[in-house]
Image 1: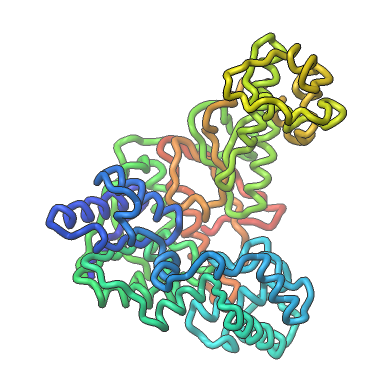
Image 2: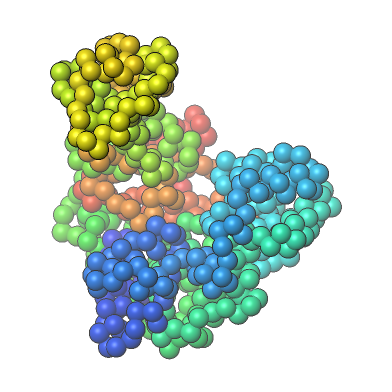
Length: 505
């Protein structure tokens, strides 16, 4: 086994892809190379970069995917066999336990906004990915289930019977099926990225892949192991034996940021020592008493919080300021809303627009108050006809010529207030937002010129299932990941002690 240790910004993915290139040049077919990442985003990034670099299409790289996706593919499953949130509610009704589940289980574990029933799923799923008896995990759990073991056992057995009866699988079930049927493909070379985040059941898959391949590369950084709450077994990564390659030059982290991050990460005991140097720039670090003090008017920004609640607070503040942003992969304003406003105001200024653009405007108008019934009878616009506001009023049901915030009645009041703030700020609505909002966990692997980090860190055990006293180390890792996202400026916002939060050092 070959181990690649990649501290933040050292080009771990670039290194792995360079190794992929060397094996391709040596004659290894692309469909005999496996590249497996922890998250879909990381897997997609590897596919995109590989396709661009080697002039492949996606179908020529069938084993560039997540481990869950590999199990799904090898088992020949279909999407109709994957349990959805709606299916979990059907299971609850079948078990005669009412509206028990809310979200269900994803690739990274149960949904965060879970209900009472989902806490059962969390413990049941944790036992499976840890490869431990359910009773043991139940006994060690500190999650307040307010029920006895018999009920947990009943739900667990019912879930398994239901899945077997209907031929359905959750994400952990895919991995179990892969191991049970021994569906591991025989590959020449295998790459495992972000290995520090793998759970025990995923490590079993890795061992199978290693056994069936001629050579195996395992890459990661135990200092960035921030998914222990979801069952990640960082100890397996730390204990790996083999040839070690250390990437010891960060191309992202300035020297000041590097020095601070080293202070944080040295709080962790039993880690792999990975000395690395910063880039030549010194960088800047600023401390603020409140996030309102941070000027977001220039450059690209990544705004980070430890918790979803903190990220939502940041979102509300950014909306008040009138900045466009991306949160959870979605733009703050739907592009169709923006286009509707643009086209409507163009009409009011005397410009002409196409039939398709008219339909988009009408989509956000109130039927029989702002437009009359029957407007959909307009031609498809294939003839190239352009329409003025007068044309629409005379022949196509338009009843007014009010400004957009009055005329587009189906846009929510919240979005209207926000959009007015953006327009006052002079935001360029047709451009990709330069501000991203995220929790630290969701931002893993991301970077930005400037980063604002809320230093609020909850003083509670990070692991919800085992009574262990290592959460300070886990929180130090989370903080470390947040600190190492910035390429130039790092803005740290003082913790709000009144909310019961504190730094881990």
